[in-house]
Length: 184
Image (cartoon, rainbow, N blue to C red):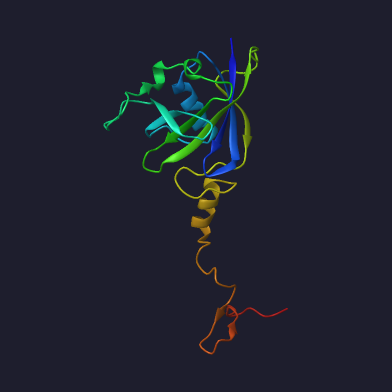
C-alpha cells in the first residue's frame, strides 16, 4: 500500500510547515483532520481543498460539505474522495483553506511516495513539525495560554511605560515606606 508524504506549508510563512504521512486509500477528510491536529486548530469551521498546479492556481474543489454558494463545477466531498484518486503527478499540489471567515491558507505538496508502511505509525500521522504554528484565535507565544493567565493574574500590561512613577515636577518618586520601617 502506498504511503504519501505531504509537506503542509502555512501560506503566509513557508518556514512554518508540517510533514504528514497518509495512505493513498485514506480520504481527504482524514488529511483535513491531520492538518488541523498538526497546527493545533479546532475542527469547528468550514474547509476545502483545491487541486493545484505548480503555480498554486486553484483547480477542482474537494470540500468538507456542499456549501450554500455558487459552483462552476460541483465539488468532490472530502469524506468520499480518496487521496490517491486525486494524485495526477509525482509533485501534486493542493491548496487547503480552513475557516472561510479567517481564511487560513495552507499549501500542501506531495514530497514523497513510499511503498513501505511504518508499522510504528498510525496513519494519517504528523511526522515532522517546523516552526511555531500561528494561533487560531489570537496571540500565542511559546507557552500558549499560560502567558495570558500570567498577564491577567499580575496585570502585566498596566505600568509598562517605566519602572517608577514621576511626581508633578517630573522627578522620580520612590514608593513611600510603611510607618515603623527603618532603613538598615
